[in-house]
Length: 466
Image 1 (cartoon, rainbow, N blue to C red):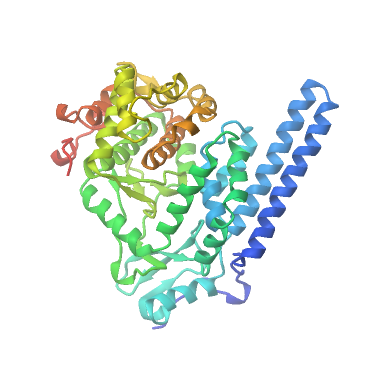
Image 2 (cartoon, one colour):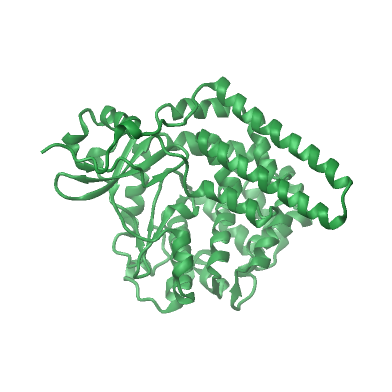
């Protein structure tokens, strides 16, 4: 029997929308910059002639229009510029809610490529017609992101799978974008004018070049899957290795609610459980397995009715060595213990301070904010007020001069992303008690789920590195 393509009407399929030409990408990016700067200039002129109340309305309206256009153009260009937009959407607290909402849509979806193009990539990578490998292949993608999109399919043995297909030419588009770093830096300033643009763009470069090979992503996913196998709430889809190539990744299909859907229907107790699952997954993976899941945006989670969370997209994974983790642990302990001398020593161990230098009060304040939930031995709630104060710490010019270690840039990006999730979930706990597991591993403190009395298999209770 031949391949079944449900609802297929290839004559109606849309083209990819991916502009590969460096010149054309530069023109679109340059045009977006020009229009946004012109809008800002006109806004400043109008504001000078307006009352205070009208000034606020005009400023907000201008930010919303700019955010909407940035979202549309970056979503169509995909590649490096879309990834950059996803990252800065985590740090857009200074923008009005409607503008933040527009940027956050980059975390969920992008305009998809046509089925003909997706089919061509899959057949070229696997070396044969789709019907040879799949009984059924859905032409409409279930998700589309910065470098690829996902299709639902069924194998000949009946297994349901999700097939991630890389956009043809996205590697060329990314290299075109990376040649325009100075222009791309504008978008970082759009959300956070004082953010370290160069460091952010360096991180985007590393992320995207690493994500272009889906075989590497499959290896990361398998490593996480082996570590978390048997956990009652943390789930990693199994990779179908025989159908995975550089530009195609085939994995188990998993059902569940998306992040926004979960927030809309969940009860407070379910959100508290979800918060602890996210914490255990992130920090046990880091401190016990030295694997850092580097892309905590809402599109990468599926929520099951029993409280379990399936984690998706392992293209952005870091492996950290023990010396860095020891220095990071020392940094956390120094802040929690209010020890400025140990704090300076930890920064030196991370290569951020010279032998005789001391950190400024502003740098200390930055890390105190990050670790504030750990500072008191009492319940702490992640709320909107805590999130709003991120604007202050993101704007510290001293952080640029400090020169954050590359690994710490990754850690801080995840910290802001995870904090945003905790605020959405209104997570409340004695986080100092929970983080003893990572600050003082010899104490063998239990994971966050144990804080709710959740029974776990013995191997997930130990804090010993594996």
